[in-house]
Amino acid sequence: MMVFTANYKMEKRIFDTPQATARGFAEHFLKLHKENDKLSIALSGGSTPKILFDLLASEFKADFDWSKIHLYWGDERCVPPTDDDSNYKMTVDHLISEIDIPSSNVHRVLGENDPEGEAIRYGEKLANDLSEQVGLPVFDIVLLGIGGDGHTASIFPHEMGLMTDKRVCVIGTNPDSGQKRVTLTGPVINNAKVICFLATGNGKAEKIDEIFNKKDNYLAYPASHIHPTHGNLFWYLDQEAVSKSI
Image (tube, rainbow, N blue to C red; front, side, top):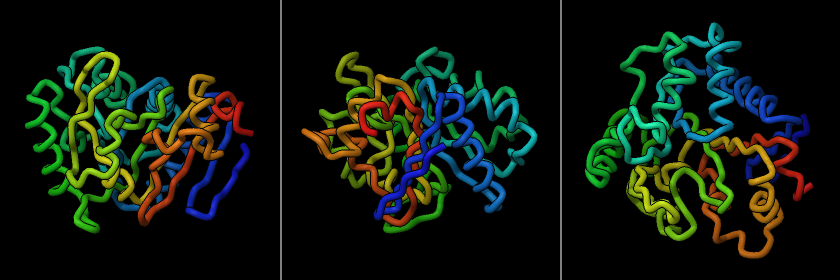
């Protein structure tokens, strides 16, 4: 593993493979768990979190006291929980069904509900459940991915206003499919104590290069605006993801 640091509380942790990348985050997650009585984590979807969840549900399963972990979601597609597009369903299939976690610790976005109403409901729930700083809820950990277009959570480049939106949750729209998604806003993500990107594969390499090296139109990418206001930022990456930037 290679570790690079920056002045604004950012670390890049680079591993050989997606599996090793997921393991690196799992070990970080476990360390935070041992240091804190309870943890709230906002999860993401995607292929690398799937590898992570499988790892947590097998090799790391017995290391966690899951009764002290509260699962939330950073974004969710507006589909029923049984739909294959559902981030919640993916988490159930690869993690929740395999661990002994109280159902009261699993706080899903109700993707089957009216999107605008659900964004309000989930935002209010987060405000009630979590501690508060600068008027916004504070997650212990926010797990993020980055898309090939530079989006993160469900904040896409054509909706950059969501990066500064004062609400807790809003609706993001996939520009290709038109699918609506409930997502945390930029200020809530940046309000977390620990923010971790998981990014693997060549498909992320171009945007990661532009963001890390401040190239071209990098500020047009939502992922480039993730800077914690009072926490720490970690990028967990494999060699392919940084193949253009190092």
